[in-house]
Each structure stands twice: as structure tokens, then as C-alpha cells.
Length: 329
Image (cartoon, rainbow, N blue to C red; front, side, top):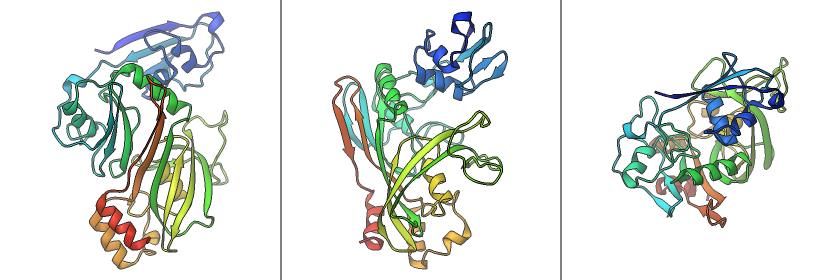
């Protein structure tokens, strides 16, 4: 069973944010873990789910469900891992396209987590859920670099770096068409799409304009910030570099789609009109790749123990690299 915690807010703690208050309470003891519990719907105030920014009042009753670790239920998956770096604290892995990062419906035992469990018994269980070691994630069809935590201290340190936006994450992608400017920055508040639970979208105001600044009127979503730079342009499609300042679900895919340039091969965020811009030959070769073209190329962080700056770079997989050389020489 999950562990249940109950806190009654004292007068001297009133007006504190919910996430800050919880970060000071054992066994939570960190802002990132408090935010994880809140986002997972495991925290209620006076019987109702509340946002991390909720300002507490005297005698508020906070209830928290701490998930019981489920790692023992996971099955190891003996498949080769492309490990770029490993020590006692972290693993940096090059995830192939087609591999889901952690167990979910339809992928209970064929994920990166299952493969990691076959590789080592040392994976963090910081948040007590069935995602041992996972500090961040990339989509199934996305290839590239991920850092894995092998113990709770490393997990906490890396989570804090992501929270502080000090992690260096550079992606490469191919988008449909050519952006109007050679570089740019996109900021919005991303939430789950109101009509399609598989998709995410930027929140819009009553005039249909994308909202870029949080306000008290906005009760859902999180700020997302992406910058892009065009590396090579063919008019029908462009090779671009993207930098993530935040790490929201489907962030790059949402931002590029709403910019009018969905990622090549992204069936969820593209449309028939975008598909018409791609030549038959390119379209055929893309179908053979069986993915959208997004690659986590660069990952940089400060090592949680040595405090040394760690920087890694990995090229596209071989088949995708051949595609890029042909169409973006």
C-alpha cells in the first residue's frame, strides 16, 4: 500500500507555496519530489487537488500519497544498450528510436527501464514509482542521449539541475517547409490538448492567440521555451537545431507544429497540407525510417558527485544519417 501523509498548516507557514512547504517535510525533503507528487495527482489540500503554486492558509489539511516502490514488479529485458558513459552515479545512454523510455500501458516490459534493470541493479528509486533511474525522458520515436541516475543522491542533484534549467540539451530535427526566419525563440504554456488526450497544445486566449506569460487566470499547463536555428534549407523541408530550456511533454513537436513546420514524419502533429510539400521520393524514404526525425544530439550537465562539467554528443543513427546526407548535403 502507498504511504499516506497528513499535514495541518500552522499559522507561521501560511502564505507559503504548496511545493515549497512540502519540500521541507520529511520524507519528501526536496522541491523536485514535491512537484512530482503534485503533478502526479498525489497531493490534495482540503480534499481537492491543488497546483504547486497554491498559497497555503492556516489549518489547511494537506494529504500526500507516497507511492510504494514497484521496481520488483519490473522484468529485466536483456537487450544491448549503447552506453556512452557510466560510473557509480550516472549512466549516459544513446537511446534508439522505437524504444519506450519507461513502462506504460502497452509497454509494460519492453522499455529502456527494463533493459537498464538487466544491465545493473543500481538504479535510483528517488520517487518510489516504477521508473527507476529515470530523470528525464524522450519520446519513443526520438533517438539520442539520456542521463540515468544510479542512486537517489545523483537523481536529486540531476533533477535540481533540470529544474534550474542548467542542463544543456541540443536536438536536431527535420521540419516540413522553411521557417520565415533563420532562428527564433518560442515560448508558450503547454497543456494536454482539450479534444485529443494523445496530444498537447499551447494555451490560447479568447482571441485565439498563444499565451506566453502565466497568470492567475491560467490554472493548467506549464511554461515551455524552445529556440531553433535553421542549419540547412531545402524549402520543402529544413534541417534545424533546437535548444530546450524546459522539458515539457512533446514540447519540440508542439512548438514546431504551431509554428507551421511540423517535424517530418510526425503523424500526430502534422496534417495533409504539410505532407503535400514533401516529394514522393523523400516521402518513400521517410516511411522506411518509420519515425519522425528528432534526435537528442547534445547533453551537458554537472556531475552530481565530482561537480565536473560533463558534455556528450552523439550523431544520428546510420540509416537516418544516410537520409540526411542525401537530402541535406
